Amino acid sequence: MTDKTVNVILELMKDVLSKDNLFPPSLYWARKLLSVCNEPRRKYNDGKEKQIPVKSMWYFPLKPRLQRLFISSKTASDMRWHAEKRIDVEGSLSHPADSIAWKDFDKQYPDFARDLRNIKLSLATDGFNPFGNMSTSYSM
Image (cartoon, rainbow, N blue to C red; front, top):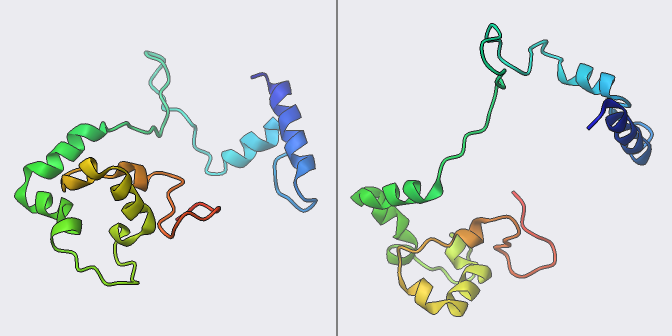
């Protein structure tokens, strides 16, 4: 994206927001705002290689991490706790397994719900509402 395009987008955003907003009106001010700590965004490496970001997000594959949770007997029992040791108090939401969404999921997929080791990742994703099927989604 060119500097001019970014400036147009920033100006548009500034116009859309309320009058007392602090949104930067141009790329120059956005860069100035982001460099408050006077630190570069990239590491110096004497020009030998490509510049690398100071901070970067690493991807950790989910499957091996979940497998490791079931290798240890302690963590494996913790992963099954919701089905083996949890005390279900009627009308109380003490665990996500008490929620309407969890119970609906178990009714829709009984074969999946039968195995205590199955992890309901779909219930932990954005858009899951532990308090029922309301129009507003749950947010932390």
